[in-house]
Length: 144
Image 1 (cartoon, one colour):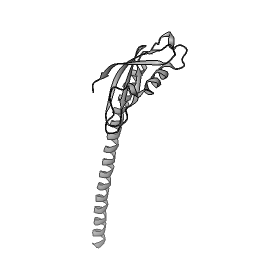
Image 2 (spheres, rainbow, N blue to C red):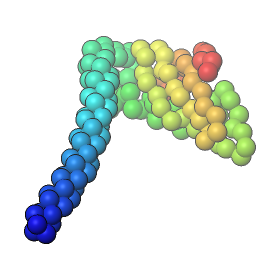
Image 3 (cartoon, rainbow, N blue to C red):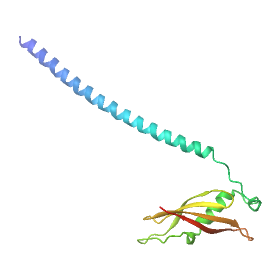
Image 4 (cartoon, rainbow, N blue to C red):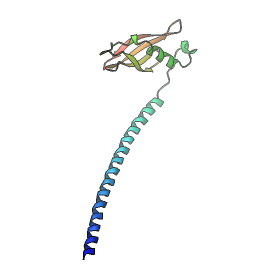
């Protein structure tokens, strides 16, 4: 009788242990499924962004830029090197700087700027001066 009671108690303990293990496994599976769903959403978003970038028309620049290797980088770097063109002042001791640019067409460039506290965007007109340097004129500060 004692053996039977010990066997019954052991079976009961193993059964409880299996339920706890099953619950832990189910929770882990649920967590992994949630991670998979989040990655699917991120993947879809990145696929959309990639499609937009691939379908973007290339910028055709004027003949003045024909002699410049990688003119889009040349124009962007010239703008980034002139933070005085930023239409906002830094706050709380921050220094405004350009953090992103995109050539829109043969005359305009979009730029994003920030100082670590505030940020903004603007559109500039550009042209190549007689001495071969890009010149910029603020066209519009984009409201935030």
